[in-house]
Amino acid sequence: MNRSVSFYIAGLLSGALLATLIFALFTGGTLRDNRTVVLKLGHSLDTAHPVHAGMVHMAERLEEKSGGRVRLEIYPNGQLGSETECIEQLQQGALAMTKTSAAPLEGFVAEMGVFGIPYIFRDADHFWRVLDGPIGQELSVASEGVGLRGLCYYDAGSRSFYTINKPVRSPADLQGMKIRVMKSKTMMNMVEALGGSPTPIPWGELYTALQQKMVDGAENNLPSFYTNRHFEVAKHFTLDEHSRVPDILLISKPIWDGLTPQVQQWVQEAALESSRFQRTLWEEKTREALEAVQKEGVTIYRPSKEPFSQKVLAMHNSFAGTSVGELLKRIKEAD
Image 1 (cartoon, helix red, strand yellow):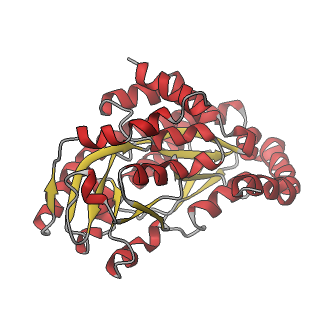
Image 2 (tube, rainbow, N blue to C red):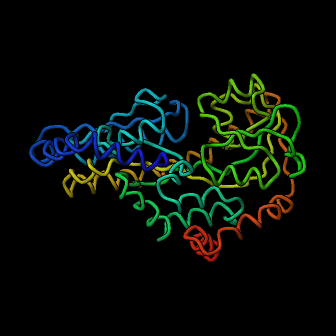
Image 3 (cartoon, rainbow, N blue to C red):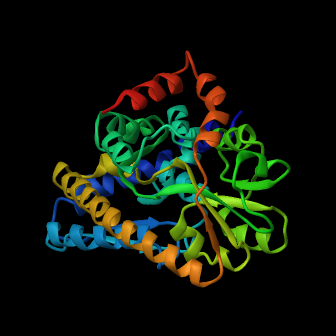
């Protein structure tokens, strides 16, 4: 039994009674009178991260829209558990919201793996046109069958390689390198296709893994590279921009179903507004991070992307005839 299915079964068994109590609470009194409703949001990022700032903006807008009737409490830095643990709590109705990268969600919804496929988006504008359109909407609600519902996407930028001992200027440089990746089959296949050795390591353990040279490098966006101080041990950053994997703000389906239509509207509107706010902030923080890491002695490389994209064509073709392959085709054809 795979882990995503076990999460769901565990959620059904241990959360059935809890979900019933939550439904009674949210429909029987709390949201139909004048008392304040508190929705808890747990995530693993630090408070300096632009995505955290986006969630803070959502909390402010939600309180304004509801006239103080609905309040969002945010618990950063893994206070309520790891990313996986928070997702499990959402399935059980024990936690209202969490933020996760789209990559781990492919264990629940196979189509989410499309974001880990390298070089499918032409640029940032193409990426956001897809997410703001029908494809993005379909994916945001595709996890409802496992107790989760997407509210909005946050910009997590383009992902690039950074390394300790030598730079990556071409796919050949990745040969023999152990590269940390998220626990995503698609992203592991990507690193293999480019010649590296993928090594899944929890994000919170990566600094130590780099410091102790358990891996030769990793791949992520510039703000995360900077705010988590990975620049202290990895001095080579290659802007190959191989993939764009958004963060997704999830809400517990049992809790969502217990909200009144008015409160659902407030929550959804506040989430979408926070997404637009966060995107602008992300652009600013990316520029700041680039300047900051260079001052800290990091060398930035801008290689030709053509050799990288050619290396992964077989990976693209391997999805033919699958639901992910159909989605990949739709994304490439999207205006």
